Image (cartoon, rainbow, N blue to C red; front, top):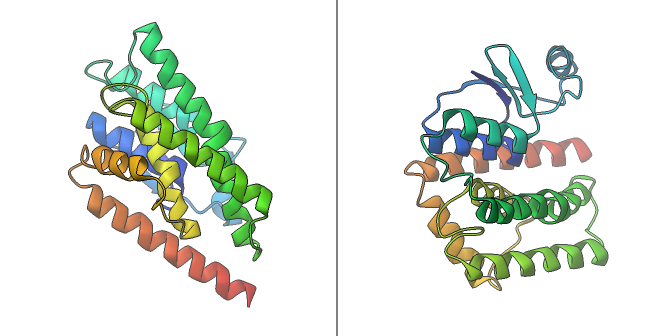
Length: 214
């Protein structure tokens, strides 16, 4: 199994953590989507040339949510990460759709502004605050974001919250999120090493981006 990926990408981080939780070994093909040569190679298997892109015995999938669900349904020893019970799964799905359509979307919009050398607008900052307020509510209603145990929804929301590091955004106003992050990351014995790698990669990218702008 191959994963075209880059550690600084939150969607890639999410797939990597799902694979870790499942005990699935991936052949990582580090891909720079800003390199025309690498993009051309990726386009041959994924016309959208996005990462993560996953290949399993010739079967190609992209979009991190789709990859994660595929991995869990094919390689999961049980349904804990993506419960089959319709009521529980509906909450997991709602949180996933909330992540892609609200939380990660608002975080990414703020990051894009920063990468363009701008300060995020008041509108963008307010949307982010509202998304985090909702996240705080979700993680304090249950033991985890969607159920009484870890699911893929926790992994994806964790990826989004971790991406706040791009903005140096503190979570002092969100004790529930801080407690939940500690609980989720404790599910991964090597998370500290994983987080160190993604943080160093992100800082290097930001430094390079700033140098180009000057």
